[in-house]
Length: 94
Length: 474
Image (tube, rainbow over all chains, first blue to last red; front, side, top):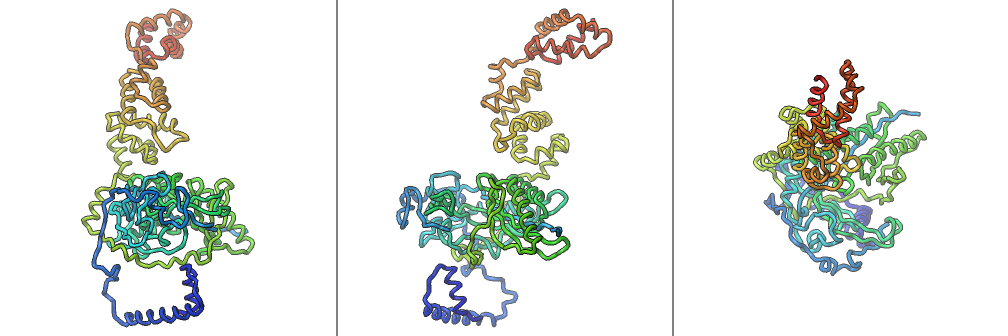
């Protein structure tokens, strides 16, 4: 499965990234080599192996349903590039 | 004009009744000041780790049991990626590949609607726009109090064929979730939301037509109206030989129409991938049984109990169980010691009447209604006074005994006082008395009315009737 520069442009658009055409060529190359490498796994017979859901051998890590205080509003808004008195402020959406 | 069959699938989002958010300990409480129920986890700050709320998992399983689903032994979370300012992380944590529940069903009249899946996910934040609408706003202000509040998404199969069926399913589902105790299911507050997927196909065709998705439906009535509108809109396009566009549309309740929401072409490519920060959830038999045991009484079991143990008719039972709030209230009143049949009569009669137009909240206490029922049953006040006391309790609150005292509703059961009133009326009305004695039994009603009038409606009617019969037959 080869990744074309067209695929790269599409993924970049979805990810809101601006790539130059040189970068697109470069990323297509690196992604293809990663996919080729992973393709080696296809050669293994995995029938009878339960699908892996997580690389750690851990399950059921929970917290109890208890409320704890979080950030104050001032703390929450402190790093925002743009804000109003009570909220974050984002540019025109549509 | 060609005849079409409507095909509908519904998606519901229900907010789970937890105290804290899905992956962090921030409160889920409705209505806080903007951005005061937030922390580094739900704001998506770098370097944080989410930890799953165990209670949210249990509530999702309960919802699955209530909707007859197969609860999955293993479920896990994925990231759904899209850029929108209500989503601080630029992805939503949801269950895509392995949802917690699959393959359920809900029965509506004469039909079974299949449930494809139920999955757990986090809610998004709320956007407040600077202008009237998103289109004429120079900027917007995200409030992340609601971000990462636990939701379940319930997806039906496309088994629904009409607006009426869709409405009935929505009502049934709301009632089941309320009985299961998993959500507040208030559509007007947004704790239950519904999206409609609808397409038309020529009658007899098995292949589905092209569908539109309708959002922003805040009431059962809106679901019904939006479907009826969309059936006409799509039929008109197909009649002209056109093609329905696959898109998301929003319901404008004021105008009664659906409108296309301008969306990007690629908006539906979410590039799901496994959420590496959360480990799988495994529900073994022991945990599963614990959750099953904690499921509250569901409608069918409740109907059985009301008919067999409480002796209610099937009709009354159905009417009570139809509305979970009334069913819970009924139980509280009989637990407070009131007679079951009398309680049912009060609830289905005067209480239902007084609730018209404000069906969400009962303004009276169960223990107070139990006292009122006892006062009427024992004859301390008569039935029509009882109705007035109830009205007063609805309007101004207060305890029934206090109202009976201050309003002077106590029934006259003093034999000598009543005897005097009876004799006075007999003396003052010789003609009706003669009529009665001549066999016109109807005259009795007139005389009774006169006595009640003379005592300001407070005479014990049973005693008056007996005394009057005695006086007339003498």
